[in-house]
Image (cartoon, rainbow, N blue to C red; front, side, top):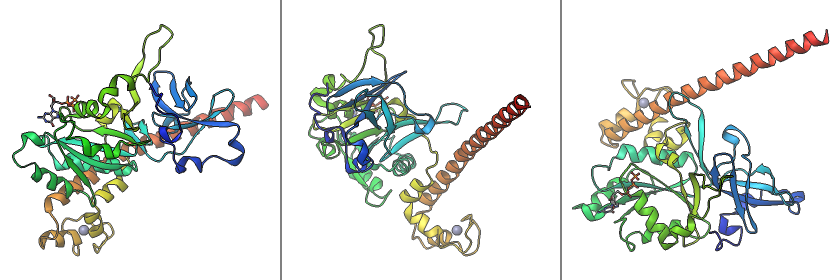
Length: 349
Ligand SMILES: Nc1nc2c(ncn2[C@@H]2O[C@H](COP(=O)(O)OP(=O)(O)OP(=O)(O)O)[C@@H](O)[C@H]2O)c(=O)[nH]1
Ligand SMILES: [Zn+2]
C-alpha cells in the first residue's frame, strides 16, 4: 500500500503545515494525513502511522479526506486539525442546503472535458470558479483529441477562459498522451478530477495510477465483520509520488460562496464592473456602465458577460438559502439558550 511513502513530504507535508506546529508540540505530537473517510472512522497515515481514528470535528470544521491532523504521539488520538491550504465543499443534496466537505489540501484540480459535444465554456468556467474559490490551481484537460478534426480550436477556446490557464489536449487512452499531466502528479502533490460523465475521468485515473492502481487501492480498512467499508472518499497513491483524490462528491460540485472565485476567473469583466458609474450597477441600461460600453466597442465578448451574470446570479441565489439556513440555526441556538436560562432560573428560585 503506502510503503513508498516514507517521509512526511511524501504525504504532502509542506511549510504551510509545519509553521502551524507550536514549539511545545514538537515532541508530544505527530502529524498524520486523513487518507480515507469511512462511515464512522477516519483512516490516517504518516511515516510509522497507519491507523483509524474516530471522526474529528463538526460541520465545516470536521476533518475530511486530505486533511492533516495533529495526533497525540502516545495515544495517536487526534488533538487538532491543521489549517487547510484548500478545501472543496458542496451543498448537500436536495433541499437541504448544509455544506458538505468533499476534500481538503488538494493542490491541482484537473477539470476534464472532451473535444466534442461535452465541450461547454460555461461549464468549464463554473469549474474554474470552484477551483479558484477552493484555492486550488485548475488545469483544463481536454480528452478525445484523437476524435476531433481541429483539437487546437478547443484548446484555444479553453485557454481564453482565465488568465494564465494551462490547457492540455490529449487522448486519455494513450500513455504518452497523458505524460504532460504527470507534472501535477509528482512527489507529495495532491490532484483531483472533475468533469461530466463520459469525458474520460476513469480512463485518466487508470492511466495516471498505472500498474500501481491495484496497490494504491490498498488504502482501505475492514469493518468489524471483516468487510471492506470504503465510501469512495480516499487518496490514492500515484506511481510518481503524488496523490489522487477520488470522491463521487467532486462530480456534483455546485456553486456556493464562490464569489471570489468567479471574480478571479472573470477578472476582465470584474475589472470593468469596478469602473461603472454606480457601485450597484446592474450592467443593463444604467448610464455610465463600463461593461455595456466595452460590449458596444467590441472590447469584451457579450456572451462571456452573459455567462458571468448567470454565474453571479446563481451564486447569490445559493448563498441566500445558505444564509437563511444559518439564520435559522442561530435563531434556534438563541431559543435553546433562552429555554436553558429559564430552566436555571426556575431551579435556582
Ligand atoms: N477516443 C477516445 N476515447 C476516450 C478518451 N477518453 C475516454 N475515452 C472513452 O470514453 C468513454 C468514457 O470514458 P470514462 O473514462 O469512463 O469517462 P468518465 O468521465 O469516467 O465517465 P463517468 O464514470 O460516467 O463519470 C470510454 O469508452 C473511454 O474509453 C479519449 O481521449 N479518446
Ligand atoms: Zn455596469
